[in-house]
Image (tube, rainbow, N blue to C red; front, side, top):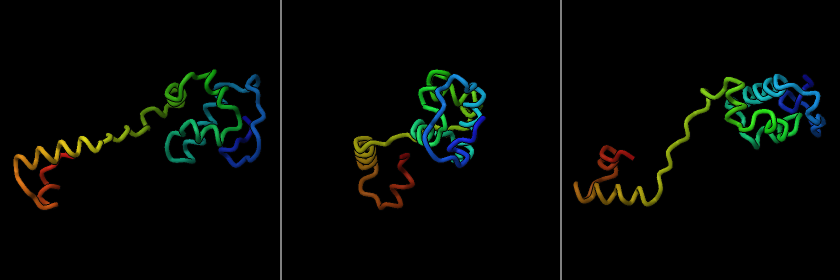
Length: 113
């Protein structure tokens, strides 16, 4: 495998995909992910790869499949739950109805959010 941007190469991608193996792509993705400390995102891969993203897409289909092929799928942290403003409002109103006015510290102890 040729040295890639992930291992310090700068410049344009120059492989058209015919001479690259799936193992080459897997090794480059693993190297980039190790450098980042987390599985690389699509944007990070596009920015750092020596190959075009289309080659990865043609060979693996999705980033999830690529990560599975690299055995990195278990290392991806689960997404953090999103708490919307309306969720906060509902929760605070529910707590106010039950407990009345509370200090911040009391609210912090009671609220599950």
